[in-house]
Image (cartoon, rainbow, N blue to C red; front, side, top):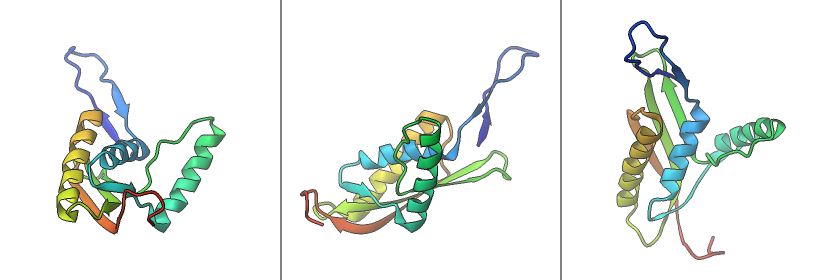
Length: 139
Protein backbone atom coordinates (compact mmCIF):
# COMPACT_ATOMS: atom_id res chain seq x y z
CA UNK A 1 0.00 0.00 0.00
CA UNK A 2 1.40 3.38 -0.89
CA UNK A 3 0.43 6.67 0.63
CA UNK A 4 1.85 10.06 -0.26
CA UNK A 5 2.77 12.42 2.52
CA UNK A 6 2.08 16.05 1.55
CA UNK A 7 5.07 18.39 1.36
CA UNK A 8 4.57 22.10 2.03
CA UNK A 9 7.67 23.10 0.06
CA UNK A 10 6.71 24.28 -3.42
CA UNK A 11 8.36 22.28 -6.18
CA UNK A 12 9.98 19.79 -3.79
CA UNK A 13 9.74 16.07 -4.27
CA UNK A 14 7.10 14.50 -2.13
CA UNK A 15 8.28 11.61 0.02
CA UNK A 16 6.37 8.39 -0.40
CA UNK A 17 5.90 5.88 2.39
CA UNK A 18 5.29 2.22 1.67
CA UNK A 19 3.25 0.45 4.32
CA UNK A 20 2.88 -3.26 3.60
CA UNK A 21 0.02 -5.50 4.63
CA UNK A 22 2.09 -7.51 7.17
CA UNK A 23 2.94 -4.27 9.00
CA UNK A 24 -0.73 -3.29 9.17
CA UNK A 25 -1.63 -6.83 10.29
CA UNK A 26 0.98 -6.70 13.07
CA UNK A 27 -0.37 -3.37 14.35
CA UNK A 28 -3.93 -4.73 14.27
CA UNK A 29 -2.94 -7.98 15.99
CA UNK A 30 -1.16 -6.18 18.82
CA UNK A 31 -4.16 -3.87 19.32
CA UNK A 32 -6.69 -6.72 19.27
CA UNK A 33 -4.85 -8.94 21.73
CA UNK A 34 -4.63 -6.01 24.16
CA UNK A 35 -8.41 -5.73 24.46
CA UNK A 36 -9.90 -7.11 27.67
CA UNK A 37 -11.82 -10.30 26.94
CA UNK A 38 -9.64 -11.44 24.03
CA UNK A 39 -7.98 -14.72 24.96
CA UNK A 40 -6.04 -15.15 21.70
CA UNK A 41 -6.18 -14.58 17.98
CA UNK A 42 -7.11 -17.60 15.89
CA UNK A 43 -5.16 -17.98 12.62
CA UNK A 44 -7.26 -20.53 10.74
CA UNK A 45 -5.86 -22.74 7.95
CA UNK A 46 -5.12 -19.93 5.47
CA UNK A 47 -3.48 -17.90 8.22
CA UNK A 48 -1.24 -20.80 9.22
CA UNK A 49 -0.06 -21.30 5.62
CA UNK A 50 0.75 -17.62 5.08
CA UNK A 51 2.42 -17.45 8.50
CA UNK A 52 4.79 -20.30 7.61
CA UNK A 53 5.71 -18.70 4.27
CA UNK A 54 6.22 -15.24 5.81
CA UNK A 55 8.24 -16.63 8.72
CA UNK A 56 10.50 -18.53 6.32
CA UNK A 57 11.13 -15.39 4.22
CA UNK A 58 11.89 -13.31 7.30
CA UNK A 59 14.14 -15.98 8.80
CA UNK A 60 16.19 -16.03 5.57
CA UNK A 61 16.71 -12.28 5.97
CA UNK A 62 17.48 -12.58 9.70
CA UNK A 63 14.29 -10.86 10.87
CA UNK A 64 11.99 -11.79 13.73
CA UNK A 65 8.40 -11.88 12.45
CA UNK A 66 5.80 -9.80 14.27
CA UNK A 67 2.73 -11.83 15.23
CA UNK A 68 -0.09 -11.42 12.73
CA UNK A 69 -2.07 -14.62 13.30
CA UNK A 70 -5.80 -14.18 13.01
CA UNK A 71 -5.59 -10.93 11.04
CA UNK A 72 -6.27 -10.56 7.32
CA UNK A 73 -5.70 -7.31 5.47
CA UNK A 74 -7.44 -6.40 2.22
CA UNK A 75 -6.35 -3.29 0.33
CA UNK A 76 -8.27 -2.00 -2.68
CA UNK A 77 -5.79 0.17 -4.57
CA UNK A 78 -8.14 0.66 -7.52
CA UNK A 79 -10.14 3.10 -5.42
CA UNK A 80 -8.88 6.64 -4.90
CA UNK A 81 -7.86 6.91 -2.15
CA UNK A 82 -7.03 3.26 -1.44
CA UNK A 83 -9.38 1.51 0.97
CA UNK A 84 -8.32 -0.75 3.80
CA UNK A 85 -10.40 -3.56 5.31
CA UNK A 86 -9.33 -5.80 8.19
CA UNK A 87 -10.71 -9.15 9.32
CA UNK A 88 -9.84 -10.46 12.77
CA UNK A 89 -10.54 -13.98 14.04
CA UNK A 90 -10.33 -14.41 17.80
CA UNK A 91 -11.29 -16.34 20.89
CA UNK A 92 -13.07 -14.49 23.68
CA UNK A 93 -13.22 -15.23 27.38
CA UNK A 94 -16.30 -16.98 28.72
CA UNK A 95 -16.46 -14.25 31.36
CA UNK A 96 -17.06 -11.42 28.87
CA UNK A 97 -19.92 -10.61 26.52
CA UNK A 98 -18.80 -11.54 23.01
CA UNK A 99 -20.53 -8.58 21.31
CA UNK A 100 -18.96 -6.08 23.72
CA UNK A 101 -15.50 -7.58 23.18
CA UNK A 102 -15.96 -7.52 19.38
CA UNK A 103 -16.99 -3.85 19.42
CA UNK A 104 -14.02 -2.95 21.63
CA UNK A 105 -11.68 -4.78 19.23
CA UNK A 106 -13.15 -2.86 16.28
CA UNK A 107 -12.62 0.48 18.02
CA UNK A 108 -9.11 -0.31 19.28
CA UNK A 109 -7.86 -1.77 15.99
CA UNK A 110 -9.26 1.17 14.01
CA UNK A 111 -7.57 3.64 16.37
CA UNK A 112 -4.23 1.79 16.47
CA UNK A 113 -3.96 1.35 12.70
CA UNK A 114 -4.91 4.99 12.07
CA UNK A 115 -2.40 6.21 14.68
CA UNK A 116 0.44 4.00 13.38
CA UNK A 117 -0.09 4.44 9.64
CA UNK A 118 -2.24 7.50 9.08
CA UNK A 119 -4.74 5.28 7.25
CA UNK A 120 -8.15 4.70 8.80
CA UNK A 121 -9.60 1.29 7.97
CA UNK A 122 -12.91 1.45 6.15
CA UNK A 123 -14.04 -1.70 7.96
CA UNK A 124 -12.85 -3.97 10.78
CA UNK A 125 -14.71 -7.28 10.80
CA UNK A 126 -14.40 -9.39 13.95
CA UNK A 127 -15.24 -13.10 13.91
CA UNK A 128 -15.45 -14.92 17.23
CA UNK A 129 -14.20 -18.42 16.52
CA UNK A 130 -14.52 -19.83 20.03
CA UNK A 131 -15.16 -18.94 23.65
CA UNK A 132 -12.34 -19.93 25.94
CA UNK A 133 -10.91 -19.46 29.38
CA UNK A 134 -7.99 -17.45 30.75
CA UNK A 135 -6.94 -20.48 32.82
CA UNK A 136 -3.88 -22.30 31.53
CA UNK A 137 -4.63 -25.73 30.15
CA UNK A 138 -8.38 -25.14 30.04
CA UNK A 139 -8.60 -25.87 26.30
